[in-house]
Length: 259
Image (cartoon, rainbow, N blue to C red; front, side, top):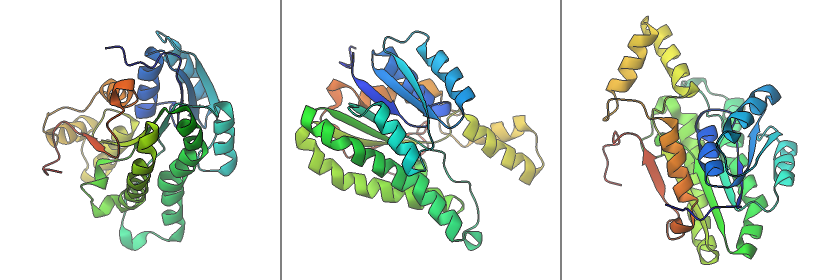
């Protein structure tokens, strides 16, 4: 399928690795000119080179910290007329509600609610004027299936989800969509860290920790990041203009609810 994205422009936040990188790969393959982002110049340059392989669109690396006003301004200046914005950022660590202080809460809100909202604010007026915009927020399965241990992630990303649901109705008449992708158990560095936590807590091997994770998934395997990237590319496509304000779960069928 031709997704109608040739020569569109995109900013993909936190895209030097993991799911952000997978989204950048999929978009660049479709002919999108992609600005990729990370905090480490070495890691980002390597990722940009890898994304460029097989890409039909250009790939421009921008080193910037999304959690700062200066970093966001630098990223927006690199592509002020972006047609596509993929919001992504490191998620807060699991923990204990009783032990989280103001610093932990502020860090979670800054990274996983405020940073993506400010990126949307910086681009949405241009999208409205051009009558085309695709905004995709990478959030978490914890938005719909909260767990106390992931409370920082749940709270911050649920706030982002609520604000974007309201914005989606205002932007829909301008062919600007906002959707959220809720990943669970993709084979990325994040899952490696979760496995390492299980290793330390349960005194098990990495193989045993990964097997435990996979057994908890209905599909009995972790997701391939490329599957996530392809889903993101479709949500950004010309054909997806009637899909907005939605939460797309990508979890191998694990979520037990209806909605």
